[in-house]
Structures are given as C-alpha cells and as structure tokens.
Image (spheres, rainbow, N blue to C red):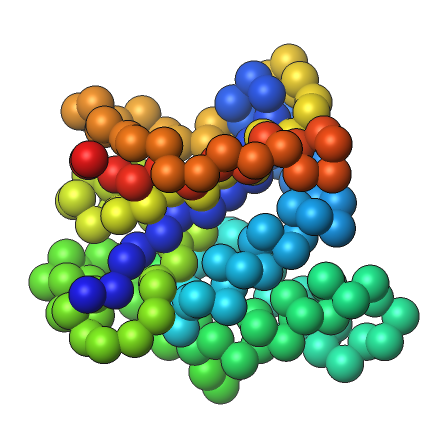
Length: 187
C-alpha cells in the first residue's frame, strides 16, 4: 500500500508563509534539498492545492538548467517526471501531465493508495488539512527553518477538529541550521 506524505517547510514559530504571503525565507541549503530529493525519488504521484502548485510549477522551467546546483537540477528532474494532481475550484484547464480535481474524494484517494507504486505527496496547507481530517495522511515531513517570523499569512496546519497522534521516525540537523523530521501518523 502506498503512503501519503505531507511535507512542508515551517518557521520556528509555526508559519509556512510570512505576513506578505511569501515563502522566500524557505530557501533550503544543499543537505536539506537532498533530504527533500530523497522523498521525491520515492514519490510517483504528487498532489497540490492550487496555490502551492502555482508556486511549484516554476520547476518546469528549471529542467535542464545547468547553472543550478546539482541538488536543484536533480529536484527539477524528479519533479518534472512525476504525475501531478491539483485540487482547485477555480482552475478550468491544466498543462499536460497535470490532472484537476475540484474536491477531495476520499474513496478515490483510498483507491490510489491501494494501487501498487511509490509514495503520494501532498502539498498545500488547506488541502493537507482536508486529507488529515479524512484520515488519509500516513506521514508528515517537516523542515524547521531558523527564523521567527513573528506572524504570518498561514500556519503550517490549519485548525483541525481532532488531535492527531504522531510518532517520530527520523530527526536530523541539516546544513548545520535546519531540523528535518519525519513522523508516522496515528502510530
């Protein structure tokens, strides 16, 4: 059975966007980038909320850019070869290789999880919260950045009705400044 993995970057005070709604402060160092690359290597379907997908689609333009550091070149290759599903109520069309869904259909997601293959990644706080509410997330990956924003446009996980228990699977210090962790959900 495939796992659904929610991965994100967060400030020490729990925000994924600063007050202006930007994420420029999340620029990873080489080790942290390689940590995310490892997860991407194990992913064969990526799912995004519309806003994060619009941010991430820049990787399509980075494919083959030899001026990028090797870890970024690798991420661009991995990202571009992975099929994508975007949840959006406003998009009406998408580029080749990207499927659109208006809402989360838990039965469809469970069918996708039951198929053979690699992990399924989920990105975007609102859509990830919906997946958590429906009990669809198996693992949470978080990279804590050494910054206190003092407030922000969005928290890492929007408010949920119920507590979610997590079990630490991995904890690393990367680039001498980031704390990267993986948690199993509900164990």
